Length: 185
Image (cartoon, rainbow, N blue to C red; front, side, top):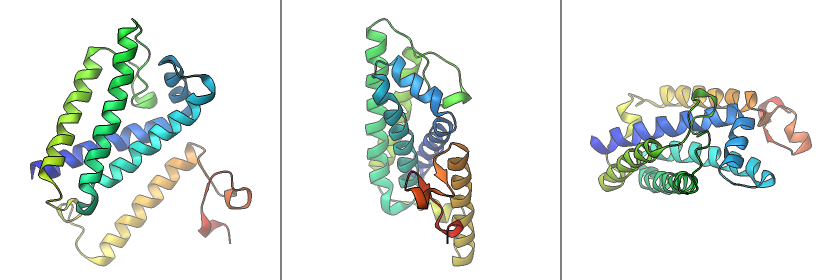
């Protein structure tokens, strides 16, 4: 049960961070610039970080991908911690941007402590391995209810991506963003 709890907490934290970053891409880009990334790379790096957080959050939930999700969380947390440690070593304390516009805080030693605690959860999830099903724990046992839950989850994520300007109804014609094939016959 500890492995499942660790996975669910990590998944929730990473999903919130990803959606917050995707909802305020300008601020996320500015945070990466403040950490020393060139302007031309900051936008793609901020988008990649948010999408990586979202993918890892999703991987943490099913038992079959729990180990990959835990490893992904460790890699992300190590990369973010290296950025924070580097900034602090240079005497800089830029805006964290960790949770997009949900928080307004500068990096500090506490940021590293938080990342270490989250890394500890990832290690617990990794050591526990693929035990305990998060989906079964949530009570999604029958096929129709699982399908309804998945449909609702996909629609919620799609709405958030549209608000962030990543999902476009006309994208299938332009190829410029993720498209919604149901709305583009």
